[in-house]
Length: 457
Image 1 (spheres, helix red, strand yellow):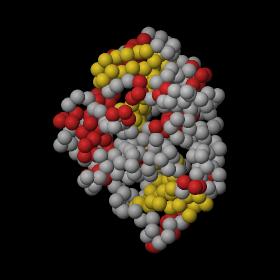
Image 2: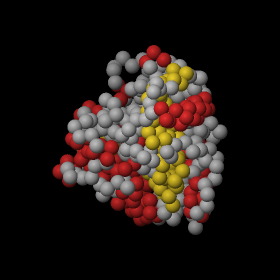
Image 3: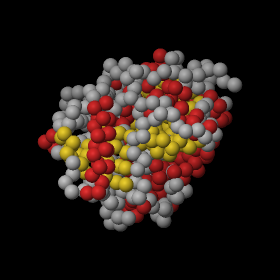
Image 4: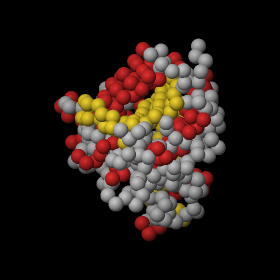
């Protein structure tokens, strides 16, 4: 049996909906490797982001804290850098326990202050002080501006370009596997965070970009009900095949990762977390892709494998992105910093494996929404409840003095969120209870006390 602490790998995708995966009921047939990983590991049935936008979600993962509020990271929108003096980042916590730490791919947590060249922060080298304590480095701040769908390009820890040809997901995985082969020759445990851009849309191309042939390969693929119910709305009809192509490529490369771990003799003592920063609604809910309270925006696939997560376990409790930093540290035998606002899911895994009732666990998930608008949402197993702030009430720091009720969905009767019940008179008591619970979550994050205005029936 292994005697040293386990290695830890995060396989982090960008903008991937939970229902792209077969193990979550998706019928596109594109995730055989993730499905196999779920069958031998642990799948989190109800896993959600706490910030459905790229930079803020990443700040939450790296620090274990919400983005907005007095206790938050401050990175409540894209373009706000993670503070260089953050003491308890994941990388610093792992490194303090003797781990070698490495970051690869999309960073999205740096911004050069007083930049005379607009958007230079997309492509300029990221200073060592802005890397949250990661020692080894193969990354770019905004990956789609520094590389191309065919042609991976990042910078190493010395600011030197690292380039690989081929489709970007394949090429980035090549770099990861090279790192693993080198790590296998040493006796030091490693923490590797590999952050892909895909299936995120290519900003400067205004489209999703799967491997060549994706549009033909997936032109007749299964379509989720929330999209299929709205023909001609949003851009899903044009973009869904390429989006699936991206997800299929990620799954193929997850298979490459697991095969390499087996070949190197690392599989038995390596924890792998597969998850995403947020989902994608294809401009159905607003004018862009994810900044909303809806399942398509916040529900993400999450699967763990390795020591402590074996056996095909399915966890039914509601969990969120802030639980992953605490979980990974716990699985490595390390204590999460006191500042972390999530909890390790290990007790949930143990209870599910034993067929016992789950231990005390929150029965809702709190989501901060920012950038396109300032909003707050609460998700229980039955209800989705969301409020938005008028522009005049925003404080410029991701919070607001006034929020108005905007959305209420009965997820048991309406899982695809087609009927907004926020003005349903018979549900006034439900809204009162959810409003109270939401306020408690907001104030626990150190958010200023705000007026929460009921919807008019």
